[in-house]
Length: 178
Ligand code: GDP
Ligand code: MG
Image 1: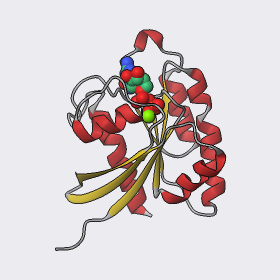
Image 2: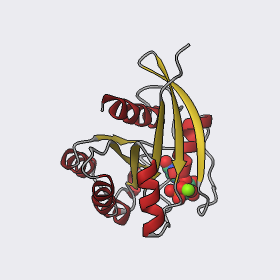
Image 3: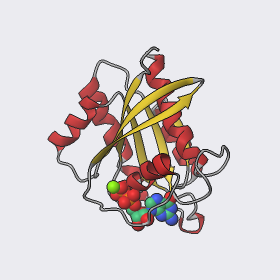
């Protein structure tokens, strides 16, 4: 049997936006409220994407790395999930600089990415409008998802958590298109 394609995915975003919660949700279909924020881990995850088994290696960054570590992660990945928290404007403002650094590190290659606005369940505390996320994604020419690591059931399309899987799958497609 042919070996399934491997995609290295690095998850970036300010500490506290929910990177670990999203990754845990994707892997286990569960939400874990407290997760060591200083922890950096890699995980393996297999998914059926368009009738093909794809092996993802997922790097959940801590979001507090120095520049050298960040650049190392950026060289390691094939594709990148840039996460912000819709209730934290400063986390949204962190995205564009991250993208610039990615472009610089990977140049002249195209950088496959997806933009994720997490904590969509906290609508009452929203600081970043959906349209702003859409606009930023359009600027970066990438897909955009608003989702929640803690609402609904992962893998169920149309739910906030189903969107978590969809975001990772779309990133894999984008990587594989190149
Ligand atoms: P990380 O530093 O980016 O890895 O963030 P964590 O995954 O550790 O999450 C930071 C905090 O946000 C934790 O208290 C989580 O319980 C919470 N959190 C993460 N995702 C969500 C979400 O989708 N909705 C809500 N309400 N809280 C979340
Ligand atoms: Mg974390």
